[in-house]
Length: 523
Image (cartoon, rainbow, N blue to C red; front, side):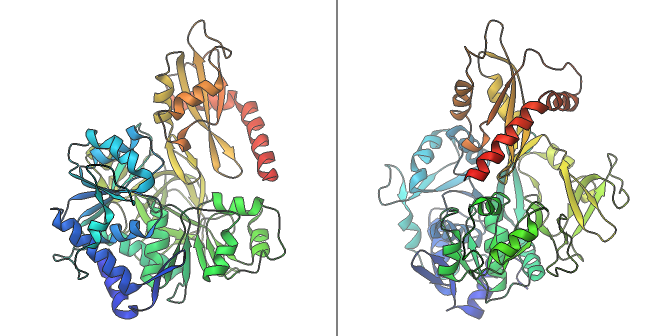
């Protein structure tokens, strides 16, 4: 049984070497060809002095070279650090510098961003750019394809570190989640088994590869089953179903936003005429079955997180599934889910509490953050920060978030990070960020602000505040709505203050939701 990412790929090369693995536009790579490209990347990095345990950052959009680099890095025993391409230079610089990355592999569109962060990353020795024109001082990606196609020596062990994935939580800066090879292998294998995936299946990836969803829940999962990957640069609602027909896609793994966008489009006569039999993603209960009927697919709800990648999945049997539930633990013999109270004591079925998880795919900890690691892994369980409930049959339900975050289009956004930027505005005296329900993106960002004395909404316009944030935050972190206040609730409890702000802004929130629903219907 494969216990490392390298072993997963090598096992499929041995079994299905000439079968197609990666579809990209009109290009098809077999397992053997893909493995050769990954091995050459490994040897190329090794030639630059990159070895076991060294960090290599990837700052690229979806493309075959991302996967060649990813598998090459981990096959060498080095550690991959995927970087969100939407980050600002300051945000990207923090991830690359904090991770101690020795090399950075960037896509052509990200070359300027790579150059901007390079001076502030002291450990960074080389920048490799995947583009026809490479900036001075950088190397072309072609140098990573000049080596031999044989596997690199010194294969990693299951417990070795494979990746550091940075994810937002309640702090102003993201935390680097430490994930072992064993975590990737187990999460992928257990998910594929639960979903019944086989070598005949073909998954289409439209989610970004820098996210655990694209890496593990789609790519690694289909790899463990011996199937194929159809990689798209990004999600396109207008091309989505045509792409599934063109490539014979049988399964897709999507974040909540995508099926809602597909549902919001005008119905077409051929909606159900597609090869997809299985969509893994979460839908509102009131449209779940209607969505399945319209598009002719089975939709399976799912839940996982970067800190524990093993999936909770609903069952495939429609007579036993529970619409509205996230599902049950995949591989329950090794994967456990518990709901606890404030003292970490299990609560009775049907009672709400914090969701805890543990499995072979649980994180090793947070990079260079022992305090956060101890808090998140106390008692040997991953504390998710999510509030949920288990019913008498062991089905998990999501209810709320305990963490002070906004969940927008599958991304966790730290409220305190956005608040710190708002507080830096010279004309804003106080600021607080709260989530607004969104019919498409799950949540949007509402910023409550109190201006400094003498300032008014006319002198500090909403568009100016948004522009101030946009210059300092990734686009997905910029507030969508602004609520001017003359004062803020005075309380010793930050949580109570947030609840009071939410209550005070109820009318504004309701109006915002109505606007968003109207916009969704008009798409």
